[in-house]
Each structure stands twice: as C-alpha cells, then as structure tokens.
Image 1 (tube, rainbow, N blue to C red):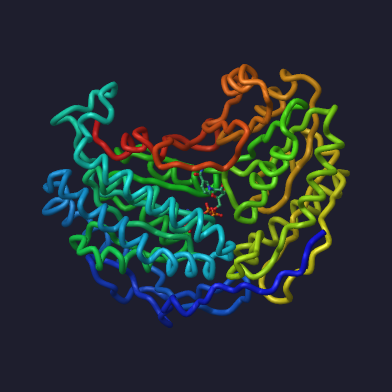
Image 2 (image 1 turned 60 degrees about the vertical axis):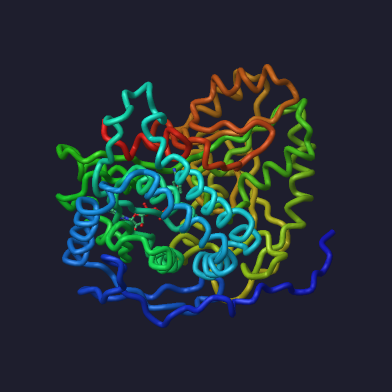
Length: 481
Ligand code: NAD
C-alpha cells in the first residue's frame, strides 16, 4: 500500500531566475537580434523567464567569438592550463549543486531527487574526468595515431542538445571539447534553456576566457543556422533520429566532422533464473526514471514466459507505490512530462497501443490539475508488429513481450532499427557474456540499468547514431586525426 507522506518540498528560494535572458556570446550576455520566447515550468505551466531566440546574425556572432577564442587563446594554452579551468568549473558546479538541481527540476519537470542525486553529480564528475585528460591527450588514443604533436583540437564545435537531461547533455558536449582545446557554441533545447544559461554564469565565475563557451538559445531554426554555419568544424548533436538525419544531410559534402546521439528502444531482458525482486526494481528504474524521457530507457520488457505472470504481478504492485507529482517534492518518483507537445505524443502512441489490441494498465493515481502529466503505464500482450514495440514513446510507458529461449530473446531484442542500450537479468555469468555479445546495443547493463559513468563510453548502433561520448573514446570526436 502507499502511505500518505507529508509534503517535503525543496525550497526554490535558492535560485534567482531573472525575468529575461540574452545570449551568452564572447563572455557576456547580449541582446539577440531576433524575437524571444517563454520557458515554462511543465509542472504548473507558470512562465519562468523570457529567453532570446538567436537568429542567423546572432549565430554568426557566436561562431566568430568562438573562432577568435580558439585561434588566439584556447588552442594555444597547454593542456594543464585548460585543465585548471575545467577543474574550477567542476568545483563550482558542486558548490552550486543545489541551485542547479532546483533550476533543472523547475524548467524540466524531473523529480528533485533525480536532478540532485543523479544529473548534477554526474555533470560535475564529467568535468572532473575530462579535466584529468586535458594534459594527457597524447596517451589517450595511441591506437589511433594520436601521440605528441598528433593530438590537435579540431576547432570550433557547434553543439545542439535535447531537453531530457539539459545540463548533463551540456556537460557531455562541452567538457571533452574544451579538454581537447576546441571552443564551442552550444544550443540548449527550447523548453529547457535555464541551466545552460546558469552554466554561462559559472563560466564567467570561473574566469573562462571570453568566447571559449558561447550559449545561444532558440528552437529548430537556431539549431539549423548553427550546424550549417560555414565556419563550424565539428557538429555534435543529441536528439531525435529525424532531426539527426536532417543534420547529416546538411553537413554531407562539407569537411565538418559529425557525431550523432539519437533515439532508442531498448530491450530489458529478464530470464527465469533472475533475482525477480531486483529485476523489478531495474525494470521500474529502466522505464520510469526521468518520466521515461531517456534515450536508453528500457522501454521493451522481454520476460521469459515461465516467470512472466509473477514478474508482472510484482511490477504492478511496485508501480502502485510510485508517487507522481510536484518535481520539487523530495518524495516524488515521477515528475511532469516536459511539454504539452511531448504529452500529446505519449497519449497518441498509447492510444494506438490500445487500438492495436495490447492490454493497458496504470495504477490509480491522482494527477495535478495544471501542467503536463502521464501516469506510469504498462502494456501487456504486445507483439513485435505493434507500434508501441517499435517506436520510441519517450514517456513512462512500458511494452511487455515474452520469450521462451535465449535465442528468441536475442532475436526479439535486436529486432529494432535502434541499438543504443539493453539490459540482461540472469544469475548465470556465462549467459550475461553470451547475451552481451549477441545484443546489437552500444551499452549492455547486466543485473542493473541506467548506470552512467564519465569513464564509460556511450553511443549507439544503427539508427541510434554514430560516435561515442564519454570515456577515452569520447575524446576522439574532438581531436584531429
Ligand atoms: P529533437 O531532435 O526534436 O531536438 C533536439 C535539439 O535539436 C533541440 O535543441 C532542437 O531545438 C534542435 N533542432 C530541432 N530541429 C533542428 C534542426 N533542423 N537543425 C538543428 N537543430 C534542430 O529531439 P528532442 O525531442 O528534443 O529530444 C528527444 C530525442 O533525443 C529522443 O529521440 C531521444 O532518444 C534523443 N536523445 C538521445 C540521446 C543519446 O545520447 N542517444 C540522449 C538524449 C536524448
């Protein structure tokens, strides 16, 4: 049963949100030439701030600033000096961690316990990790011919990120780029610009030379201007496969380097010998963490037929204890859906799942009146042909399929255009290794799910994109061959 909990709200007084924000170009906040747009709290629909929308001229100014900083300052600094700035930024992120967590939860809708205990600590860890590489680049990728003089930065990177992990995606992009001696122009997603703008203030606080990091806000058009700017040397994109495809087309025929981190439809495979209670925790974490707005979410549960009924009963019981509501409440497990648009997409695909004949179930839960909400949902009796088994829903919706043999599990798990991640639950070590070899996924978790570490590379096969972020491999995207 679910006990009534007293509200435990995190105070928002620690953040000072300004009524309006300009663009962060060449070390200063400047007015854009374009229009502006509002960013709202998805939990209440309250307007948080007005943000500038960068037009083509603003993008050009940011790229010019990044080029100047690259040529005159950043690419000339020895690695150990660049590292000092990165360490400083990492420490300030830790010091201002609570402020960043509250702001992230306000702007994105994710529960404070996740922004506080997962997002922000990993953001800081990423800067610490890549700070450590900045003066050792010649040892990072010897097998790729990077040594001594051969480890050169690429130049100016244009980086475009999504809204599901706003500050974490920023860290994945900016930390390795700066460590390798590149400068950046980064565009956060239009629904979650605020922590990127606070990060810009942190760059000022760290005395980062002007122009090394430029943050321009805006939507798809701003992103398009950035990735197609002729003076960008490298494009790094995380987002949907559809936009990734458009970007790949836009840079084809140029000498820009590209990395794309795109969608996923991960299989979480539970064998009958698995520790089932633990597996259920992993299933819940796999699909309900961050409202399921996770590219590597375990959105397809493949469970061995002999334990399917038992797993499902345990799962439903566990789902009944999940608390949906105020992202700033420390007891909240599932926060708000990031936008009205995303909510409409989750609703549409869930309705299609029902129409196609799958069984839909959600625990009873009271959803707030304002804001964007969707209850944790599970679909049973799902077949491979169902759209909810094939398409990325990017919400708290799990599709359950069954299998009888390990070979069938592999066949079904790999039957997807994506290949970002997968999970395996079994007591047999040999089976874990066999499955990890068979699964076409960039990351395979065994008896756990959604574990992230800056030292570990992340990225996908097939339509999940190309290139790796994180770890030693993540440096390769920012070094000249
Ligand atoms: P999206 O592709 O709509 O938007 C991503 C970013 O691209 C936003 O900043 C957006 O403004 C910008 N953009 C839109 N059109 C553009 C264009 N034509 N040119 C340049 N930029 C453009 O994706 P989203 O809905 O914000 O994010 C969800 C998607 O991101 C999901 O598919 C998810 O799987 C994926 N994702 C992948 C990873 C990964 O590492 N593989 C991580 C997080 C999210």
